[in-house]
Image (tube, rainbow, N blue to C red; front, side, top):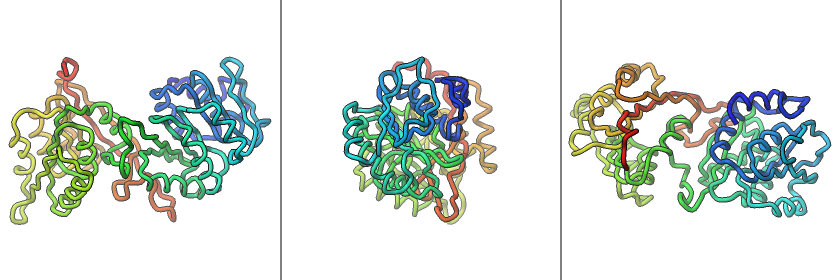
Length: 377
C-alpha cells in the first residue's frame, strides 16, 4: 500500500466508510510501512470500533483478518471488494473468545486497541501475543502516558527486553517485534541511538561478514558487535569507555576492539582521535560517526570507508560543518533520515509520565559510495 492509497483509505474514499479512522495518520503510516515489508498472511485485531483500521489490515493481509470487539454492529465499512474479515463479537479477555482466535493462529500481525485499563490491555497482550509467529509484529495503540493502561503495558514490555518502536503524534502507537530464531531476541532493546528510519537502513545494510569502524561508543557498539564480523570503536571519555567495556564483557561480545583515546593533558586532541582510523590496515565497510570532533572524523575517514559513512545528529547546529563535508562528496548518494528514535538517556521511547513528554525527532545521514552497487560480497 503506497502513501496515496493509504490516504484515500484513511479519509474514507475507499471502502464506503462514513467516518474517518480514529487514529493519527502520522502514527499509523509507519505501521503500514512496516507491514508492507512484513506482508502479513494473517492478522488479528483487538478492538474494531467503526472498522477503519480493520479495512487497512484487510488491504495489507493476503489471507485472513480476524477482528474482535464487544459490539460489531458499529462497523460502517464495506469489505465487499476483498475477502471480508472474520468478525468475533465478544469480550477479548474471555476464554471462549481467545479460543476462537487461536483456531486461526499463527498470525503475522496483532493490533491491540481494545479495553484501555491496564488489566484488559495486559490480558490482551498475554492472551494473544503468543499467537504471533516469530518475526511478526504487535501494534499497541494509545501508549502515550495519559492513557494509563496501554502506557503501563508498554513500559512493562520495554523492560522485558522486546525490540520496539513508537510513533507519538497524538495518542501514541507502539510496535513490538516478536523475536525469531535468527536473532533470538534483543537483550535490553540494544540498538544504536539513531532515528528509526536510520536504524532501519543500518539493520538492512550491516551483514555478519562486515568490518565496522566507530567514532564514539555505547549501545551502537554492542549492536555492531552482535551484528557485524569485526568492530573497532574509539571512545574519548573514560567513564563511557568503562561502562561500555563492562557491557561488552557481560554480553560476551568478543569481536570488538575497544580503544580509549582521551584528550592529552586536558587539551583537546582532535587529530589523535580522528586520525586513529589510519592505525588500521585496509578499509572498513561502514564508518559510523557519533562521537567527538565530527568534522575532523568525517574528513579523515573518507578514504578508509569502503562503502558507507553514517553520521548522527545531522540537524544539530554544532555539526553543520561536518554535514557540509558529507554533502560535498560526489561519488555516491547522500541519504537523509529524520524521525523519532529511542531516548538515549533511558533506552525507552516514552519519557517522563508526569509531564507527558515524548521522543523528539532528529536527523542522521549516510553517504553510500557508488562502488557499493558493484560489490561482489
